Length: 450
Image (cartoon, rainbow, N blue to C red; front, top):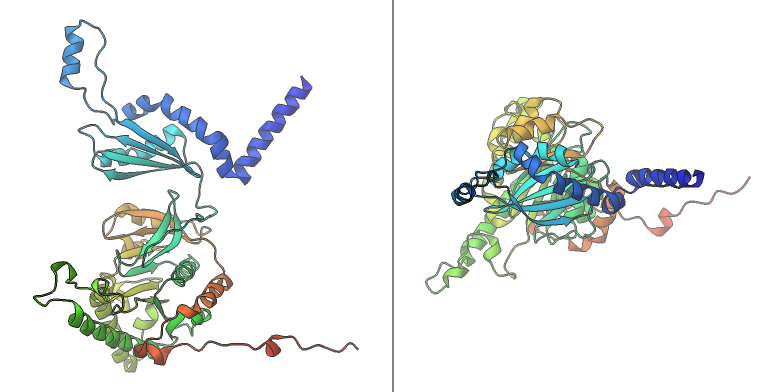
């Protein structure tokens, strides 16, 4: 009897340690079978309590009455089509009966989460009448572990992890321009590091504007085509980007194929329809702190500020077709910055909002997307740096968190792919100088022993 108790105690300790140290293994071995039994045992009861049912068809009611049976035809439930386990949870696909909409299931997601004992539950519509419940068994955002296989597109970067277990992909072809908001030490710099690390291996030109003397983006100089570290340099760099944009529009007008002999499928209005040998390389402009371009200390700087804001608005409105994209970060982006702030913010489709010190800042980034997203952004705890709420103009939003990446890791990637840094003649004057240290200079000088 004593030996049996020792074995049971050791087994319980092993399960508890496995749950804390290896949650994925715990879920696959123990959590998934238990949750599967819980789902099947309470499926009808849970969905009826959530009112996710429809009335039975008339012929079933008529058949019950005609047969004289005392049983009443039960309401129809969504049918389970497939259950697939994942490393962090499981996905349950169901077919909705006529009369139910995905919005009905989404409203009951929180109640289903508690009924089935999972950490989170998200509803996604795959096609009309088919929805998928994506469940996670533990808080995957507490310690971010990015998937090993990260597939991205032509101009896409895997930056963070979503709370449903999928990677968050920043796709510049779908959302040409983006806005990153958040308070100090909320994770904005980490988000930009992950973005540069993911963009460095791609065939793209990276342009940095860091008016903090380059302390944030300066270490990544081997992979930057241009870098501005002061407002004066940023003024000239923005002018050069606008000239580059105009030259690309001239190239596009020359080769877009509007002659009568051109096949209809070859006519294009952006650079992606041009032949590969004529297509200019895409440019991603990373602005570290937008307020530094708006704020002025005297009236002398007002003309420079107005010119920079005008150029930024022009880029945001026109540059998508010629492959120039903006990624603007800041602690706050309201009308108090000055003329043109709201006009620029309206052009930034992709929104990523980290922890905010006030509700107004969250509304600047997510107020026109979803009110629930604003509440989620203001509820981020200060100790969870890197967590953010990402949304776009479609109204969809999700919680994400970037992995912890050191500056050294990003610098190593930038040095590894420095050969991919393109030379653009229009931006050659702003190409950052890369400091190289010789082996003799790097070696420490021997100190003679006393």
